[in-house]
Amino acid sequence: MKALASTLCLAAASALVLIALAVGSAAATTAEAATTFRGSVFMVDGVVDPATVKVTLAERGAGASGDVAMKSTYLQVPQKFYKTFQPGKQYRSANGQGRQVRPQGEFNFEFHNVPAGTHTLDVVAVGVIFQQYRIDVSEGGGDLEERVRVSSNQDPNKMFRYPLKEKPAGTAS
Image (tube, rainbow, N blue to C red; front, side, top):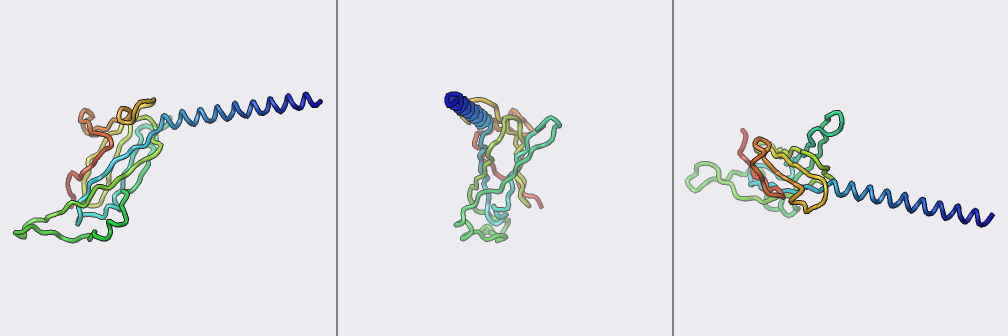
């Protein structure tokens, strides 16, 4: 009887180890397939508070039904930034014409667990226009720069470096 109980305990322990290995292997496969997408946005002061700038990443044709899977985040702004930021302050050139803006800085964003596939990246800010990007994430190993391709959404042949560094394309009135 003791031998049977001992054999059953050993079999149960072996089964648990195999299940744990299978779950760990599946998690590792999922972690390899997903990646973290990073970038930054260059902003100028007097235009917009960078903490209000929203960055969205939409996966094209996600799922069997073709639904769009969307993630969004806001720019990461260091707390010390607000000691110098003065929203809406106008900067004039020496002759009083036009508007002079000073560099405000580069603010980071990132999306975790981005699956392999084609995505669209949008940066949205009131009064500022940004280019739309196409992000292609491939499966498998290799370094991140090889797995992530960034191109213009309007012209997929126009490639950009990863991590992406975005600048405003203009202003909207």
